[in-house]
Length: 93
Image (cartoon, rainbow, N blue to C red; front, side, top):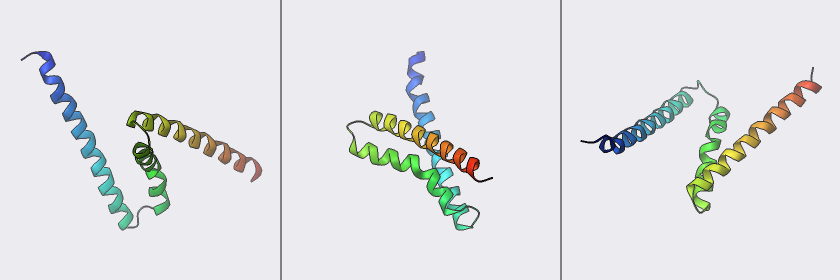
């Protein structure tokens, strides 16, 4: 068995572990929401990148383009939120 034969197995194992991690985070997030440990607004904010990626992925030619646009939009939203938070702190003392 050559070194290259194990590469596809390792890639699929990494993808499976990442998928199981996402599934676990989703289940425990919903559990925390049901038990009232988390506010629904915080769950909605955390879900923005996933929803944006799904919408852009279904409307664009490739998922790679959707990922790049999602990254750019999220960087823009982060910069905007930092700016607005700074302005709010500046004027509300």
